[in-house]
Length: 119
Image: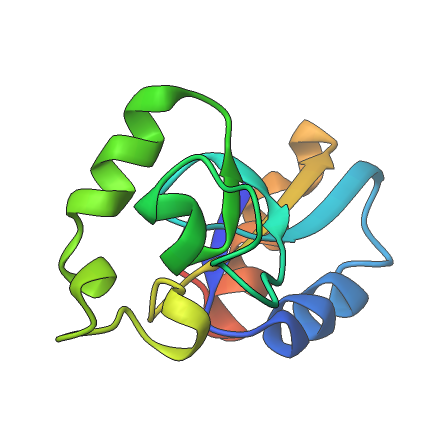
């Protein structure tokens, strides 16, 4: 089951409510609109080595050149707009992934939705 939440706390609370179900595996991750590695901090861009504007503005090591180009073309790279705090996607940007026994699937979906998720 994939469930999208507004905060990690909501996802953790829903997962805790699912503990009595037959769960094989679970994870909670923050997602972003561009593929890439964790955020980083550039202290001095004049003396630092960075591959492009998307890397500098969004603070992400992109997994491919196309994603870096798209990020540089994004409105939030101009400084005139932002996708939210730290240029993250606003809204449901926390993904709860649960591998659950088929017999418990409907109950897991109900718990996630009661916790504020979009499934």
